[in-house]
Image 1 (cartoon, rainbow over the protein chains, first blue to last red):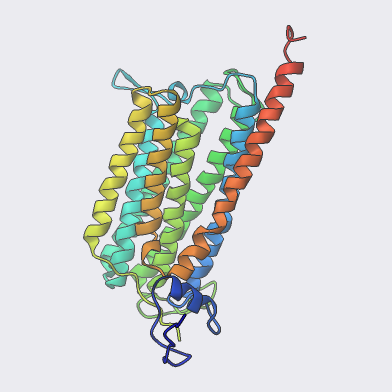
Image 2 (image 1 turned 90 degrees about the vertical axis):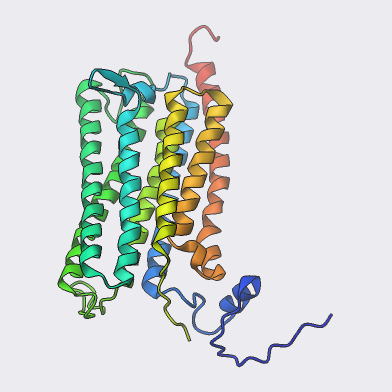
Length: 241
Length: 108
């Protein structure tokens, strides 16, 4: 077997593609992630840990739902709304899904315009994303109010069947709603930073003192898309299953 | 040394994926609206879910444009969750069995 011997210098500025790139990246000096800024790497590592947290929630949901002999409440009817005299099943959750997808799209565009240094458009898109996020949380508050006051659902039981439904519902949607709320706050903070030109002029942040840059918009975007991603799984397993 | 590359892509890519996400969300809502049941329901839900998740992670979160070393470091660890799902399902079946035997009168 003869392998072509690389004549490139050890600190080659040329990055290898494909599987060979994986080996050379991981076996190289100092850092393995050659093109990702460290802030983005840190955000991804946090998101992987958050993936495990939400997975544990959804797995415990699976376990309690599979193990209860009591009937599980029917989400199709529980989250139905009567709009204009028409009874539409699960429409509240469908609307929340569309709102979150829309906000994910505006966020993706915000990241794009941020890298073009178009401050005005980025600001507007970030604020629209934040508004849609706030609307989502508002609809969730409506959903919780309806389930608590009209249906009598509590974390320790409900009149519709399996007691585990209440605990899983409040834990999973509550944790997700908290993530959305934190995301809205982050979006507003970074929209203001974009508006003031903090990122363009690389002013240090008030919390970390790091130089500002438009890659932080992409990092905030990663968090926001992750919140949407988690909702995709909650929508499928909790509401549709 | 490392050079931080900006993830700058044509806007059309995002708009197409955005549209596709809308279509897929509508499709998964239709599964419930038309009350598709049993194995067809579960497989449709999972297919639409995985497609949506894949599009968000690959395009909106830019993972398809990252270095492979980065992509695998992010995507491989969550595969361990599959093991945990298996353990949870085994445990749930056992609990259901014992509850069915001991909690219901008439099953003596």
